[in-house]
Image 1 (spheres, rainbow, N blue to C red):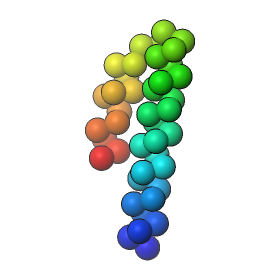
Image 2: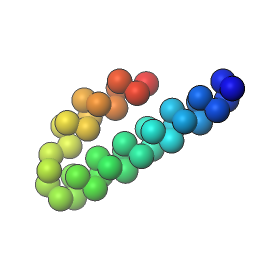
Image 3: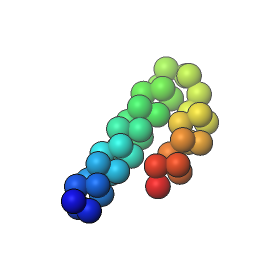
Image 4: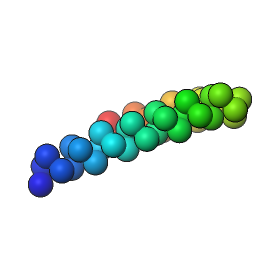
Length: 41
């Protein structure tokens, strides 16, 4: 089960990173996402 939890955490981080990149392209401001990423780690 521990391995599954690690995979989910990694998936969330990757998805969050991708989302932040998309928002950055649209000029929505990436500072909000940068504040959220450490909370997943």
